Image 1: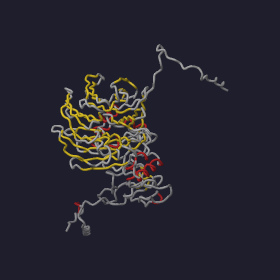
Image 2 (image 1 turned 120 degrees about the vertical axis):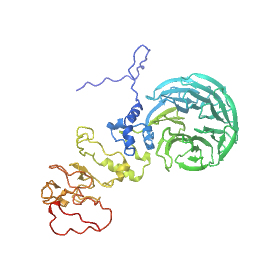
Image 3 (image 1 turned 45 degrees about the horizontal axis):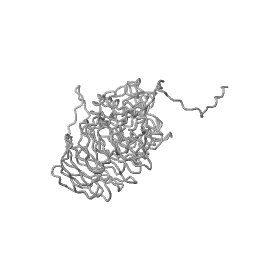
Image 4 (image 1 turned 120 degrees about the horizontal axis):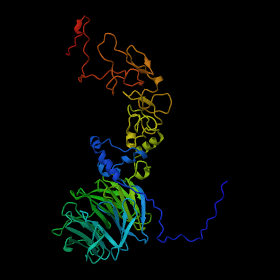
Length: 566
């Protein structure tokens, strides 16, 4: 027997490192998106030829096939970030008011209530640096469109310019009270700020001088956003109104009275037509400025909705954060959220931001943490209740879990992944595809085997529970219940017809089954096809009766004459 372990002395002091000893390496989980970008470039030709047939199989072996969100522009669900990755916390804990990714996606900058900037690595999510940026709480933080400048503002109305290396070049007093919103113009020559002093100011970025001041809100202005490519500003405040401004003439072009409580945030979609607005009404509203009408109202949050951000790649996907610590992700034209999570229970979410590549989502909240969420990998188990799938898809997923892997033999691919034996691929990952298959309704048990035409081996199709009875989808059942196949002067081998030669005196070829271009080879162990006894389709598209047979007399060496149609 092994000797018992000596008792551990918990009263001994912890080991102190004096800086001279070498510590062991720290293992960190790294989430690198460059592999997906490289795979997207490698498969771009194949995806261009078959854009609707591209999918990623489920399994650890298919992680390499997970493409970047930009590679699948017609599949916004592929970019839903609902998988928790990491939580980053400072030593000096304080609420996180704003989070912003670097334009190149290598780092994440967070602004806290103490006026500190914290930089986190965008791949391994570890701490990089900490600096005291403002004397009061950081309220807003925005990068210019060219990615060279970062403009921040605090609770006392001070505005600062920063370079990408966190070098502060300019500082000036912008407002007398707290600045709540900041947005750059499309040319980066100007930017707009809004404050609790009920004003919106237009600034010259190069000179740092105020050009115009927009007045019209009856209370604090909580958010402002510049149109992505037009001279148009949108703002919202405590007066429950959304106002559209012309920054050149200072005129209020239109006022939208669609809310009954404070506007907490608004963002333009990159297409320039949709405006997403969140408020304390616990709803998310989408407006179409082409008609100046409400396009959609989305409900799901239990408390105030605090922030909204659109996906950088997919224009239909956006995320919202709530005062109850929830994170919702939505699709335009969908009545409910595609993903809902409790990020920080009992602590409000103040800011969220998408990674420029679209595969990560950073969340800053009042619980002093910064959380990172990514897309689900092919080897991850997705919870159906968090994805709000229809009942038919849920049943299809349940049926898919109960079925064995497809071990169909593919000629010539026995040595590759997906061939015969242990390298067979898992079932198809798409639940909608499984539910829509005509030969196997979901949830009907194990499948029977029927041969695929032209392959010479059995393929999985049909339904059944192992009993000798015809399947529910109209297949012909087991070999003992099938009618004998049609042969011409030959025998039967393994209940499958085999053609030796045409009947004597005939000049035609043996009938071909649908779905195959040539007859089965001699000696192949093929099975029975349900359409083997049917003749090939007629080339005559007119619905006329067949012609009468020719008269019985000798035709000589030229053979029988072809009948004339009436």
